[in-house]
Image (cartoon, rainbow, N blue to C red; front, side):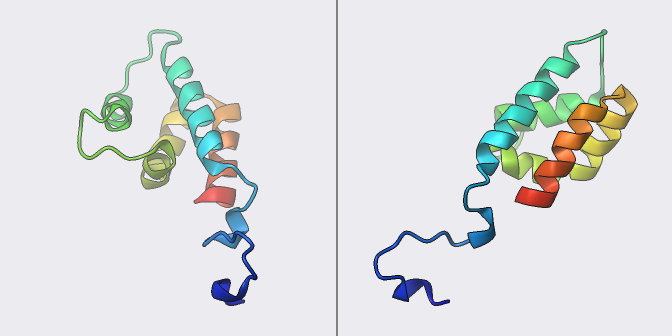
Length: 99
């Protein structure tokens, strides 16, 4: 379908993302990750690095979805080490539907 011939209707460049609210899901996951990090004296060098990226204190500032997408495998590993199956499921959903 040619997006220029849509008779004025709003189209999304990535039609498959319409209605998924990927940015909100990414923010939700990041908030849950931050909460999980605060539990049980968790210390992790990757988390420190990733959190600095999220906070914009290390490297360029991008949105949460970008950072999650760039570090999917590292985050999977982190969540496995933390035994956070529910967060791993959220990450999986985000990857399949939004990345």
